[in-house]
Amino acid sequence: MNRRVLGVAMALLAAMILFECVVLGYGESPRAVLRMLFEGTWGSGYGIGQTLFKATPLLFTGLAVQVGLRAGLFNIGAEGQLVVASFAVGWLGTKLGGLPAPVAIPLLLATAFVAGAAWALPTAILRLRQNVHEVLGAILSNRIADALVAALLAGGAAIKGTVHTAEMGAGCMLPRLGAFVPALGASAASLALPLALVVVAAVLPLFRKTAIGREIVLSGSNPTASTAAGIPVGQRRGLAYVASGGLAGLGAAATVLGYKGYYEQGLGAGAGFLGLAVALLGRGSFFGLALAALLFGTLQQGGLAVNAIVPKEVMDVFAGVVIVAVAIADRWVAAVPAAKT
Image 1 (cartoon, rainbow, N blue to C red):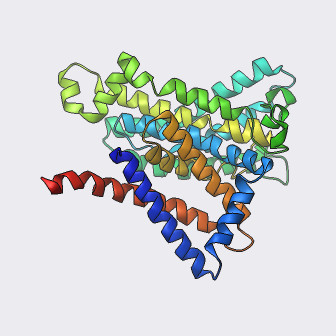
Image 2: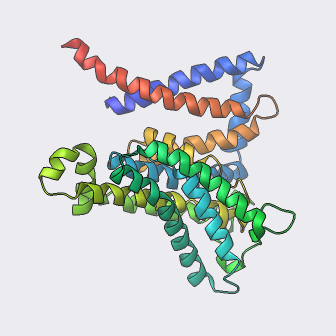
Image 3: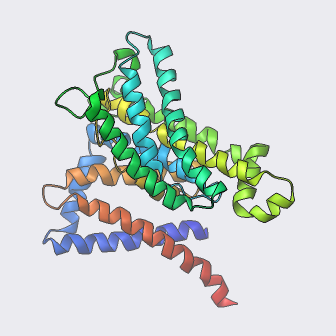
């Protein structure tokens, strides 16, 4: 078995054992909780749709983190990038009036990408010019994003007495998948999901099929050798981080364009951080990222389904354990051959 697959399998097994222990600690049956989790996610058409909806922004943020990792940079700023992009899309959508969908939607998607990329730019500059670690810059940018958007909403961007912008026109909305697959019912899953899959499928091959993509990977894996080979390491790593921010911003397609039709404070919260887990578990492959997004989307929706008997935060604990267990299992599996020699 591939060592990476073995590491993920071990991590999921360890997380499942801990999950059962936590459920038992609440005096509940793990089997009953798992049954309720399944019924609320994959056990009905509506549950499936909601799970797909929760997984969609995670695909964008997971891909965003993965792009940063290819350049040797850890983008934990996807949360703030998504917040800023979502607000920008929600605000602009109220200004587009009756523009037809073929014009409005591409414009809003471009806005989401540019806003996310622009918010990532200062962190990239601090990292590459001032050697301020991107994790520190991203933590700061996340906090500033939350404060800035809250201030803009309070300053008049929101409808008076609310924390959300006005509704966008119908031409700004992505159609729900339920319109094409009636079994999904009134779930929030939208065409943002196939869009996310297309973006993932288009971006990942660029790292091996284009010169710039290969230079980004080389710059991330060995900056010294890349510089000696004439590769503009700073430019390539900066480009990757800014592009990572843009991809994170595209998560607004699921939450704003495909679901609410306006931006609301807190909309999509957590998707940026869970993107870290998706990237780590997905291992840089299309199917890996898709399956990881589905896993964490299932946990998010499942948390709501089991909240009647155990706190939904149990699912957050499970997600955190998966991340830690993957890291530990990776190191253990990698050490096994060395121990035999």
